[in-house]
Picture 1 (cartoon, rainbow, N blue to C red):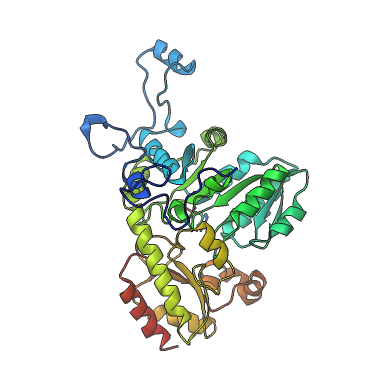
Picture 2: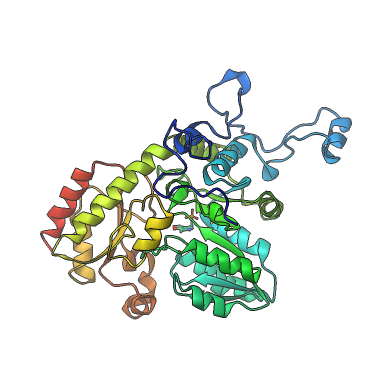
Amino acid sequence: MAKDRREPKQPGGGRSGEKSPDGKPGIGTRSVRAGEDSPNPYHSITQPIVQAATYTFRNSAELLDFKEGRIERDEYGRYGNPTVRAVERKLAALDEGEDALLFSSGMSAVTTTLLAFLAPGAHMILTEECYRRTRQFCTTLLSRYGVETSLVAPGDVQRVAALIRPETRLILTESPTNPYLHVIDLDALTGLARERGVKIMIDSTFATPYNQRPLTFGVDLVIHSGTKYLAGHNDVMAGAVVGGASLVSALRDLQGILGCVLDAHAAYLFLRGLKTFELRMARHNENGAAVARFLESHRKVRKVYYPGLEGHPSYKVAREQMSGHGGVVSFEIDGDFEASNAFIDRLRIPRIAPSLGGVESLVENVALMSYYELGPEGWREMGIADSLVRYSAGIEDADDIIADLKQSLDQV
Ligand SMILES: Cc1ncc(COP(=O)(O)O)c(C=O)c1O
């Protein structure tokens, strides 16, 4: 059963300082305070950066106590770090998981998770609309090791049901998806996964725990690219997995072998970024919605993809299970590949760069940025219009962002 689901309209279980209906501190309070050591060494208000590759034992008796589980402490940098652990505890509190594990990037979170739960002969189901490197890992690398991946259209629960077979071990989907922002009906998918004994993992990078908390729907693991909204400042690469303690522990063991750990300095920046998570997300949501509404009303825009707009296929599901829709808006302008690039070049506020979720607005022509090597034929096959623009609204003033979009669209 899904546990203590929050009201969808209430971000992350209550605004800063308020208690959520279930008595937990609000998401603003958790962003600032959860997970950190208290008191910190030297009475520092900030969590110290523990810059250590290894940790010393006073004598062999202490080492023996550690090996036999009588004391808990750090041993070696690949197996844990106090600064990293503080971020992990904060993320577990935000996403309402028992435990969390940080990684050196979102991709290492994805790949380690899949490697941990799949073996030769296994089968997995992946939503075809997803971050292309995740799809590439499954269809080109895992397949070399005897793992088969079936791709499904986002939200096609009936097709997922039809694809599940005895070897199916897990279902992985983003929600919202990239770049068309489909929102997956988590009740329907978790119900199916439970009934058929398959693990379900949600890449919640585009939603964050501010807008959606999949674990409260009964999902097994939540994956994040922390590089995006969570760290939030376009200055850190990081990934995270949040979920039940035993699954996270299995991942921790594999991470100790694969070695894709986050450095303590990056962990500190992540922690620092999370302090303003609630404030930033409120602004990203406002700006994303304002941009989507403006674009919808402009005659030089053919189509807008934003789950907060009534015309989006996921509008109803998003209303029920999300408290906001984030800062990313995808849209097709009334023109071709060149016109779309010229439109982007005229914009003055967003920077042209891959990624999303940082304080600075970013913009890209999706075909050019992410699928260029496939060429026009490949873009058509992938369902990517050559005029498709992905705009990640940062936290600048909405009026400025919209005036900038307007001046460029008016010239299309
Ligand atoms: C939805 C999603 N998941 C995972 C990743 C990979 O994250 P990272 O770039 O931090 O490795 C990305 C990157 O864009 C993403 O958009």
